[in-house]
Image (cartoon, rainbow, N blue to C red; front, side, top):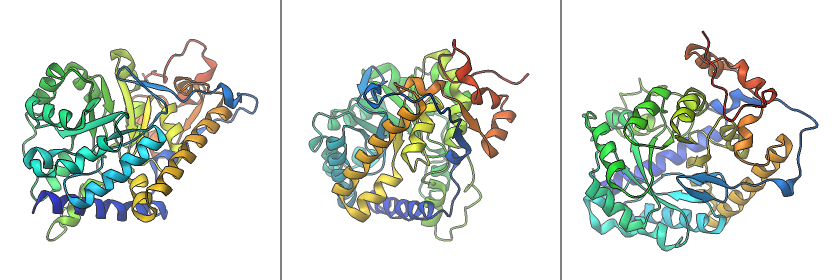
Length: 371
């Protein structure tokens, strides 16, 4: 099957998944995170700053359009709409995997449109973990990218009929990219999560920005299974760590090693964005939800939706008394359900999160471990 056909399948199946999720047919891990309401802690809206720092750059809002697509005429049009929305709202934007371009230069414009329509924005190129530094440099040059996103997707590849079956070189390849590129390298999952142990390993490889990209959003195990002739590989449908679980698990390691955490996967609302920021993410990425709006209603509707999200994020910060993005990491949150159980099994006391604002010496998410 051609790259173009595969990319079109991915968009079609991802949109179908998103519609199912928004209809309430799938639980969302972010619903296991609730803020403790303190009635007199609100601040003034004019005092709130949404600016956040990622890889030495200041983003105007802690929200970005995460990697989606490219490589076919249809997906090129999707990228055009996403780029226009990013330009009009100030969001950073990541391309979809550029493997199709690296294999066939004729599809370059389906990716380059991200920069053409968004000449002054923060644009992130996306490649797989098998990419050589020379290939990565080509991807970066095509988009005049501000950062490189390296996706790790072993689960997707295993289920994909034509996928890779050897991931042993990935750590070495990632290290080579961090050593040779002069822009930030972001490592992200594709929806199955990154654990604290993996963040530690990535730190040793020179990575300083990690997008945990946990479960709860687009599920590429299900997408690739739907592309199989018999759809006979659904045993990995529930594999992985949720985005909130990844953030809690990795908070201590990230703080200790100076790693910036980004969060994506299962983000449906502005409240989910603020929940992710409160759990230690510096910014939160959205893919499926924004794609579904673009496909159903067009780019103007997507711009309106994103601007509404930005307003709601600011208003939620007002209610929480958080005047900066980093201040959200001092708010009290209750971790419940499966998330709380995951915390306990990983040696993290969820009760610390419910009372962390009482500690004036705190600088980040609580890191106490159950002894």
